[in-house]
Length: 383
Image (cartoon, rainbow, N blue to C red; front, top):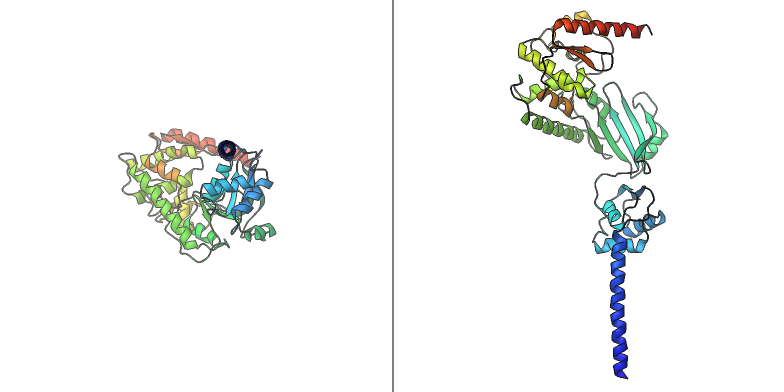
């Protein structure tokens, strides 16, 4: 009798072990296999929340098949206490394992509402936008001019939300004065800052948090520009008429202001390199304008003949070589173009009516290009 009981107990134990092993294998497969999510969603992880609430939220949105299994997997991976507050994009079909990684690895939020402060050459704006998970694109909720428009209620509301992200976009070609002036209008930043050296700020996208200081942001911009310039200088072409990274930055700022067509920056740079090599004056309007405005705003009119003849340190129709400082903050592409220009014989260029320029080697060819540009200007004036 006891033998039968022992035999049956052993049988049940063996069966139980197999069933438990099978359950573990199933759970592991379920945890790592593609999940039930039919389309991407945004998942918010509030500050102070826990894995239980996050798992229940995911189950309610049909992102995971089992909240309990999600929690057990996170616990087994020792990530239960690693939740990072933010809003995260969870892609279609993401596995539980992938979702645990998304909500625990940290870094910038990838979903939700974002406020973008754009500092442009001619204007500044504030845009409130929200990511549409289905398309992966941002949808504009409201946009306004911080200096001219009344602050919309939508902006005030999202600014107070804990998961809103704030980003500052610095356009290529803005001056340091413009940057400091516009940073002063951004109400999530604190403190004051002096205008830094022209050209020392890297145009880029900078994520900030409420209460960040303007000084710390300027330091980030300067550090980034230093890295970009050092790398470009180390990889520069041979035999350039540029004696230092500072001179390269000056030339890059001129290239930046002369063209908005990224593909022709190396050609524009080649014109100025060729002029420097032959001892010809640079004769570029943006430097003259900077001598008038000192970078404090936009001139807003054409140059006068008296200004083109006026002797200032920035009038490249009068001075030899480069002006004493950059005339704007150039982006990476213009810095690289200045230090690796196209190999051309171009000496001249003029607008061609398409947004780009017509380049020329000889003065006769250039005069024909200028005449054509005058015709285009006249035709536009008569329309």
